[in-house]
Image 1: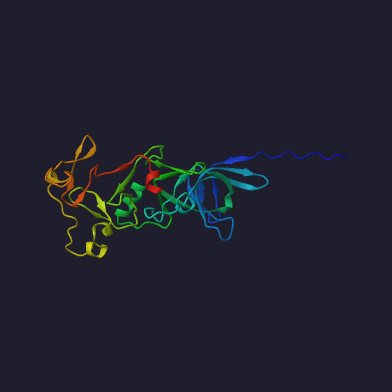
Image 2: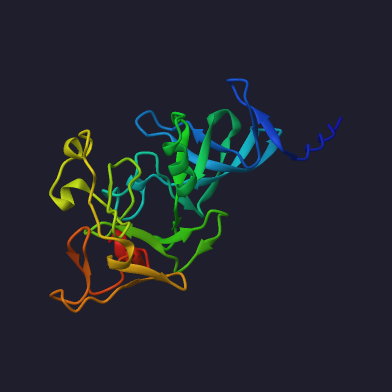
Length: 253
């Protein structure tokens, strides 16, 4: 007697999945994924979808976030402890390998949380760059998640480095730029001393910049050695005080 083949059950698409901890993970959530090897570190990513496979259980499609260590150039001094890169790398993992949900913020949102009295959670992370896994190149990302090929990455201080939210910065009251204590010959301890007034500047009309049509420009002062001078931080520059890199690769090479 010939046995009839059992019809193969169709794969079912799901919008959510309950992980071992009991939390309900939904499509669009950012999550931490358990490592598949004992010595490997955990991974992070965004859930793009779930599907129920009759043979292998529930599978989750993950668009991965890269830690700075795992991308080209590695971790640099301006990378925050909780910084990740968005990416185009996707693959499937078993639903049970999802460990927990995390909160992912754009850098500006993350800075606002830091300024608030509320403490950041250990599950709070931030992003500002997109990593093209195939090309090994970087792109900037906007608050709305828009990826820009030739975007602008804000840089500060005399060292022209992007902001690391974990570092201590001192504002210049004249040009309104921000500086590392070490770059202006001081220390955090000195800056936090009661009575410390910061980098004191001249009145706004005498400072090194003014806003014209949304662009930062120097106020020319021919009495200074190079004609361009910041009375506040005593720093000479021959270009815009607020520097924007058109190609952020220049910053991270």
